[in-house]
Image (cartoon, rainbow, N blue to C red; front, side):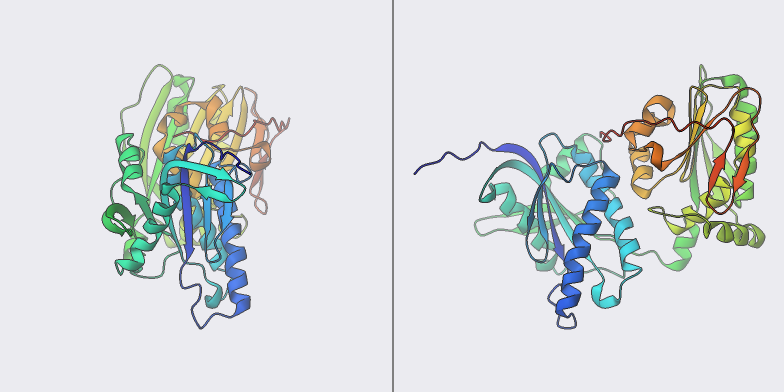
Length: 396
């Protein structure tokens, strides 16, 4: 009996490979842990990137997975946000598992016509995606050192598409030969490199932006932010000219970390959940979150504002302030969508920050009494308002 197959659609495809899955030093229990861990980190990365796991086609491949995304999925999110979110999820997982259960991941991304029926996913793009996945091994590409970041391979079509839209930084990518049965093509590969200790210590720049609906308070807000940075062992080293009308200014801070400030920051970090942010962001952000009183006071005269200081985000909409610790993926989203830093009404939805993810504080011109809670990282004020926003997937 003949049955018609569903029509193919343009879809983005992600394939994964658990590196050294069949290595002899791994037991059956280790391999089971790797397979479970793979799906755990993939789900976490989907959540961080605002992608729907339920609406994607997932096919297990033993030592990896094939994922076909719904039509219309933004390619920039897959190329930029997903690898960063996977890095954060793998960092957390590998930190609590023995070396035999460590996950090193290679992922490949492609896009094109894919049909899905009861037998699985069909289309040349699927086969080409797995050839991309094989390219690092066939080219003898290896990790230069231990890193939790995945090796990323993308097709030339996808690379050109996101580069044309300026949705990817070409730095770090290089061409790689992709060998097929009938022909050879080219892909683009990015291999993670672990920074040396001295280099890692020198990467201390913090992005700082201030958006205010009421420009008359800019001096007091900027002064309060500068003092907050000092408490965390950082200082402003450069700044752009402000954009007037409402008021927006981009600044750059550098960590100077006196021993006393660094010790205080490390102590504060133990009181908060660092989640997806890197450890340095976590220590600095933890210190700032416990010293927000003067900044919140400075913001009282303006009804709307967005302040970003590294991984700390303060959003004020209609006199309600939301304080949030940004994940690595959310920081990357802001780096690629800077217009959100001037959009108090849009930024929380674009970053998928719900009421459960943030601390909301209703402020009035009469200064409320602020109370720090060093063991929870929460700041409360009276009256308290936990207004919510509906999550919305980020767009590229």
